Each structure stands twice: as C-alpha cells, then as structure tokens.
Image 1 (cartoon, helix red, strand yellow):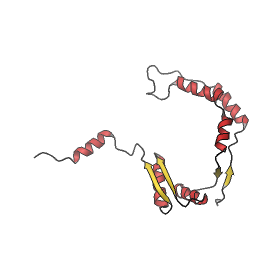
Image 2 (tube, rainbow, N blue to C red; image 1 turned 45 degrees about the vertical axis):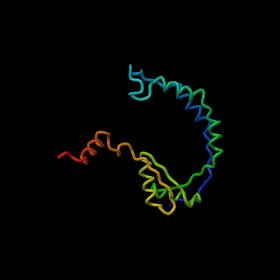
Image 3 (cartoon, rainbow, N blue to C red; image 1 turned 90 degrees about the vertical axis):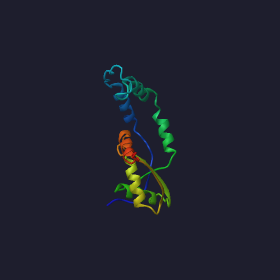
Image 4 (cartoon, rainbow, N blue to C red; image 1 turned 135 degrees about the vertical axis):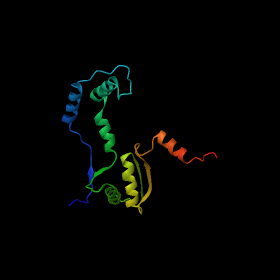
Length: 150
C-alpha cells in the first residue's frame, strides 16, 4: 500500500559520485566527426567534447546544489499518472492549480484536466509533433474542402 506522507528532500550528491563522473568524463572515447554534416546528424563531436570538459572541470555542482536546496522540495509515493498529479496537488494543499504539458506531457495534462476538473483551473497542452499533420497532409486536407469551379 502506498504511503500518503510527504517528506522534505534535500539534494546531497555524494562527493564520490561527482569524482566518479569527472573520471568517466575524462576517459570518454569520442567518435570521429562525420565530414560536412554540422548539426544535421545530431550534436557535433566538438561541441560535446567542450560540454563534457565543462562538466568535468568548470561546472560547480555544489553551488547549483545549494541553489536548488533553497527551494523547498519533497518526496511522496504516487500511482496512476494523471490521478497521481491530482493527488500530489491535493497533498501539497493546492485547491486550484494549472498544468502544462508538451509532447507526452500533453497527454498527461489532458488526462489530468478530465480527471480533476474541479481543481485544475487551466490545462495548457502542446500536442506531440507526430500527432500534428505534416504540411503536405494539411494542404491536401485544405484542398479537399475548397469550392470547385463550375
């Protein structure tokens, strides 16, 4: 049975985990960059190398951890996706709330709107891109409903 308790939470990443991450970043075996593709085949290797080096030597995790811990954070046990969000909002004491979801989150936010209409004041969704018709399909559909000359 799930607990309904809410527990305060602090981010406290062990130093050994951060040291391990830095060591693994230093040992990364990079692939060769494909010629003349830029960003068309994904993130360029050089960009990733720079990013990994920043994470290894420049990023100050402890500063970010302290900033995140300034914001009250909590853990609880939930089940059933949309109803879980409604239950979480109830447990946190919100009588009214809003929700936004994009891609898969749009499906959850829509389900949340149906499941908790009494408390969800404003669901906002951006449908997954694969749900939206492609430009050619839209044009074809548009043409189907245009008046034809006599």
